[in-house]
Length: 557
DNA sequence: GCCCGATCACCCCA
DNA sequence: CTGGGGTGATCGGG
Image 1 (cartoon, rainbow, N blue to C red):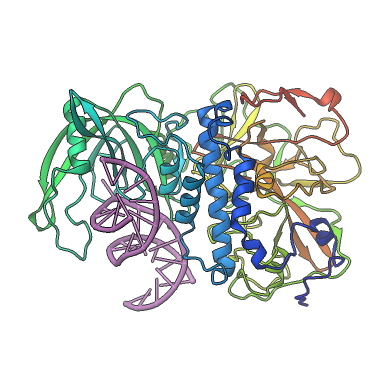
Image 2: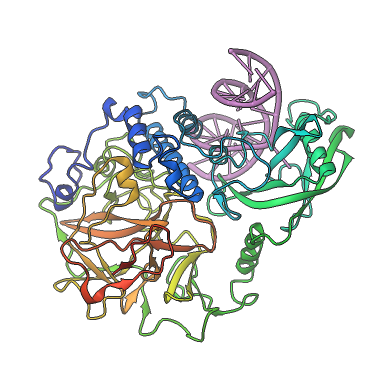
């Protein structure tokens, strides 16, 4: 049974709930980038230069710049995915989003500088070169060496401020302390004959750093282990240049080599990634202290979920059984039977696939499972849909893609964090458990997810879509649940949730999907805002908030 | 001088 | 294996 009707808003429960956020036909008015950009900048306090900015810490400014960039990228990628021809786009959402951010002043640290960059911390990650440009970490969009001219004893001399080590030049000895870096130039392209590198530009600058003892920022570029098509950049702090020499490369041409040493006493950065790789190679347990279980899910999840405690003697969550799905006693009835698609190659944006139409004509995710949608409800394909399990519209239902671990925090019980870097917008996990009817709260309301709570995700504010919550259901994960139940509250969260609905026969099944608000480096705790019920102040359930954020509201429940 | 943006190479996947 | 999509350890123009 297939319906391509997209105008009948009375069709189903889910559609009524989603009215106003989905079901719009794609039209030219959706391509009003200017108003979208203006709204975005206003939402993130980036439209008025300097005055508003000074209210925030450097870290918050940098965060907001990346979030605006990400949301713009998402908008362009979504349009390209759907109606690239109509918008007359040249593709390259990364460059277009970056150009707009730069033009509109949604950037930070625009003056080049030697040493640390305010608001950028060691271990911070980036998924596009342009992101590092916008926050002033590394200015050129392609080149590996960033340098500036400075006055040194009366002379203007070039000095390198940062380098990107992307593993393209066969660097060795990269163990997190020592880095061998090759100079630039000499026709690295394979179509042209190689020539000698010259002591100019970046190469000359690095030579000056060596002689003057000036430190340089180092960024490691790596393959993203989940999505091998993309790269992750990790900021690893300051290095000194110990020595330089000339080697003979291919075609017997001169290549400059620089040996860099990481400045001691800095927080752990790239070295952590090496450790995590070892944990993966050794299946978790052996090389690491505090591991209680290599897999809390006992094989029910697609990826193991490590359980660790480096804080006290507690051996794990009590009275708890792992389940990776959401148990429904009674789903929500649809007034009409569900629509199902027949997309044998997976659902595509811009087609009349009914599942795409329910998402406003757009595909809600990229091929990599990164959120494209700005809506406050995601329609995923259901059990009767003919599309394969690998369909782009089955992201939240296809299980864990990220290596998560449950760990004991110092003061907030158990918590959740990731071994893998998480890109902004990426699906993280579902909130599994048992859908509870009747009473809103358990006697012990820990591990209850209340989807009736008023919730204003930063993304929906920024997109101009007013929050369309609540959805009337409550999930208890007190006795049965998945990793989602371990995520703690924060007033400055790095994760938010969206309702996800799947239709099957005459029913709608709502789920809660967790997505990254920003890029999240490995081992940083995952947190979301627990929200607040509309009409009550929490009473005895109110708890002191220990999130530590400068924006902390003091309590939550 | 330095800020910007287009090039086609290169990588991965279908 | 080949083509297409997507991004980049330039480089030259304004």
